[in-house]
Amino acid sequence: MGQADYPQICPGGGLIISWQLKRKRVLLVGGGPVAAGRLVNVKDADAIVTVICPSSGLCGEMKYRIHVEKSVDEYQDRVFGGKDDLMGGYDMVLTAIDDAALSREICQMARALRIPVNVADVPPECDFYFGSLIRRGPLQVMVSTGGKGPRIAAQTRRIIQRAIPENLGQAIENVGRLRAMLRSEAPQAAAGPKRMSWMIDVCEKWSFDELATLEEEEMRIILRGWKDGSVPSARQVRGIRRTLPDSKSIRKAIAGRCPVAGYISPWLAGFAGILLGSAITSTLFIVRSSKRA
Ligand SMILES: C[C@@]1(CC(=O)O)c2cc3[nH]c(cc4nc(cc5[nH]c(cc(n2)[C@H]1CCC(=O)O)[C@@](C)(CC(=O)O)[C@@H]5CCC(=O)O)C(CC(=O)O)=C4CCC(=O)O)c(CCC(=O)O)c3CC(=O)O
Ligand SMILES: NC(=O)C1=CN([C@@H]2O[C@H](COP(=O)(O)OP(=O)(O)OC[C@H]3O[C@@H](n4cnc5c(N)ncnc54)[C@H](O)[C@@H]3O)[C@@H](O)[C@H]2O)C=CC1
Image (tube, rainbow, N blue to C red; front, side):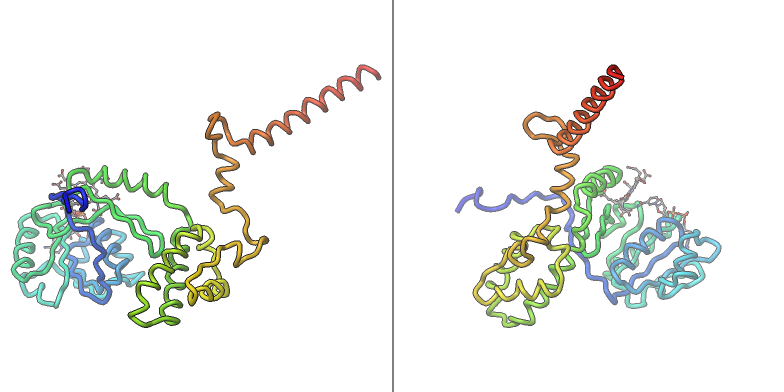
């Protein structure tokens, strides 16, 4: 048992977790563009949100969210009024106001009440930071630089965004449905380890594209393997007809590069070659025919 057997502890980071805010109460003070961004973040997590901000200070998006979309659960058209405003049983307090002294005060009051608080742009007054976010259905990715470089967080997010397959959200959605079906077929706690290793096999054996296009009937067929611990492949479940190459392989074949020579895909090169060949042949034919004539 030595140091090398265990992951190294790297102090100085933040704890990245997926805070379940559903039906929890969030107080948002402010109504500018930053507050509007925060609102979207917490409503994406199904929170119950109260906004305190005079209507004269609401930005366009905030007006839309409150009056048209009606996604703000409670709107109070006034300035922040002191400690009583924090007594609504809140699980989180967010401020995005252009008043540094008041923000500091709200932060201190929230901390005294042990309510986690974020003051936009003031790291010492944040119990947690927001991050740069990617959302694809149930898939969420957050990039944090721990306050060192928020713009770099956004740039990193864009790099990751490009690397995430388009249909991954749908694949995860379907895996969620299959897991739920498995849980109702084998609900016993004792089956946990077997359930988990069977689900691991499904996720490893089926590609994202195959999972993304899974239909309910196919899920039932896969589940037939559960009892003897086997996982049928997509080819076995779908037969030869539906096992077309996935979109990634098609894209690679058409637009990819030959890994050895580095030139564009042999498919594309081959196709271009045929086109060029027929063009040359027909030109020669036309030239010869016109000479004869
Ligand atoms: C600590 C933190 C606290 C918090 O607010 O939660 C915080 C603090 C500060 N931000 C500042 C500035 C900028 N913030 C952004 C952008 C974002 N800032 C976000 C989060 C965070 N910002 C938390 C740390 C997150 C992390 O590091 O990972 C993002 C990720 C999420 C979001 O806010 O929703 C979002 C990108 C979303 C996206 O696009 O994906 C840009 C870039 C831009 O606008 O394009 C700039 C200008 C460039 C620059 O300054 O670097 C300043 C300086 C003010 C000054 O100099 O006066 C401070 C204060 C300080 O650093 O002291
Ligand atoms: N983390 C981030 O990504 C960023 C954070 N910020 C910071 O966030 C804060 C807000 O930014 P913006 O939305 O652009 O500001 P803004 O100036 O557009 O909006 C300020 C809002 O606060 C409201 N407000 C002011 N005093 C209030 C009070 N006593 N009670 C209730 N509401 C009050 C105003 O009516 C207005 O709606 C700024 O302090 C800014 O430094 C700014 C840009 C990026």
